[in-house]
Image (tube, helix red, strand yellow):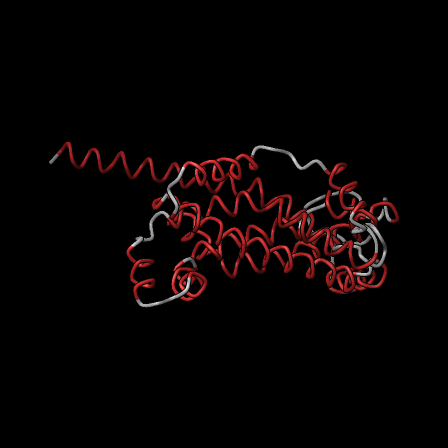
Length: 286
């Protein structure tokens, strides 16, 4: 009994220490965020001091700073552009990555294993924007509305390997007997996948969707190369362009950063429970 109680005591101490370490680690993320949020509500003079106190912050200054950013940084149009490429890229990658993962996992052949390794290899390779830009230029997809479609394709390709990786780990845990029963009942391959298999992938789909949204919405490099026209500016690019115009106005820059980050933060908080479930289930089943 003494040994058991001693081990239980050590376990509780270990858990408390890990919990304390987690709290301390969270401050590494929260302090910069609070610094940006607090200084976005201050006057120019106080914000330039980059301090965490509330001196110079007020609701009046808050509305003045944020209204100025909405007016001068073209926030609404940039949000629309970011939404278009984020939704388009996410839908494409979720659709094709889930189907590719299902086919490759179910067909246990050397060819499917080769394609699996080939796609996973994409996780380690950097995105070469210069060749991609020239390739899209040859296809006339760098100007006008075609540039938006080109950017969506690049975003889908860049997020495909990790999304595919998540789906393969999850699909391995789904019994092949479900497929056989659907085929016996006369279901076509597409009807079987979208009617039976895809609904079972909801936890990992939410996780993959959130990863795509965060990656595409927060991307800077691809949008800088392909969407640098004033009419196609994405939300993240407004911060970059605003930095050139308002280099000394930290209160406005911080306000712009908060506005750009807010949609992703809200979406993440809304679906974080599903994200954790999707990652843990995929890890166990993979």
